[in-house]
Length: 98
Length: 396
Image (cartoon, rainbow over all chains, first blue to last red; front, side):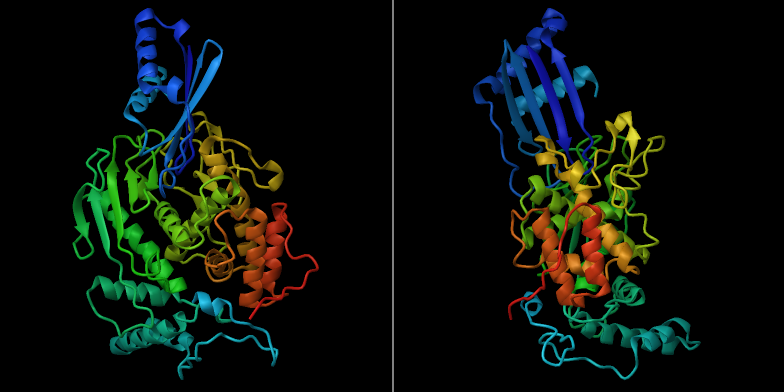
């Protein structure tokens, strides 16, 4: 399973991108990542959300999961990122340090 | 003011009309009053000159959207009004009575908004630098819209201005949440605190102005126009506060935001989009195009609203430089008239916006005026053609 988290937008529009392949991780970390992906329900609810309300210069988060050839992307905006997705995003950025 | 913008001009006697307002003529010219206010030996005379200038200028300010005047606001006047307010002195009632109502709150490094209230409109300065910078930035933006466009706060109806500082931890962003401004502290490595640059405040509050006017949607070209308008007026707030002409201004957005050691002058350059920075810690080179041929098609960043804003940003810069002098007086008035034009729709694209700026220039300054030419040439530099040989007529 490959996971890609991309942050764009914000006042400065400075991008942050992190990519992970679970095949390259120790089994424990790979399992944790799979758990977070499942919790975020990306594979079930892959969707794009419109910018919430009148927020401007908020961050945009695109989380793409490539699982066995199927690709799913979930887009959420700062201020309305579902908690499970937030956990996944923070975890991936934390692992990759960017 | 919106109604007045529709008034026909350039008719009958061939001279430009000034809409429905009666002319206000003073015996003593503003230039003479200003000279007295600055230079007279007698402090009472200086004070009287200042009061007279403020009062008479405020009547003129009420006509700002309509007149042929090239100098709607003297920097002496707006600085005087701000000083008078700071000292708690009342002024003779101006034609447009703008009084800001600011509240700064502390989010205390959490995501909870607005957070703890720390400074209100009449509270003195405290020790928190971010709080004071936010307070002053809101004031500078308010003074700009009031002084230049007679607009009472961002909605024109005295909307209270609220901001929260210390949002989250190491948060490298500032944003408008639909109702208030929110500032992060930056991470200290790539970004300083976001209250450090007044154009950030001007940019964010202008999103509120746009929302109460054209309501440009935050996607694609309309979104890039939304972003560009915020950069334009954010920059003008800074230029106005520094009393700079177009030639003096640096035309940079977020110049103070980048931490030491980062290879970059600012986050964006309106004069030279694509040259503001080049640093791996910022993701590489500044991605903004400076011409339609470089338009970026992407799904990120709401369809590239912060990237493609470089194109209309440069058009504004080129227009302002060709007109010369303080940018808020020529190009700024044209752009503001366009932003408040009912013909500007939520999904207007670059071409439509450019057409409207030319129309605004014609209404404000006349077809064939230097300003009209500047708008046409400004858009030409970014690959957008407006005007041509078409004659502009507009309905009464």
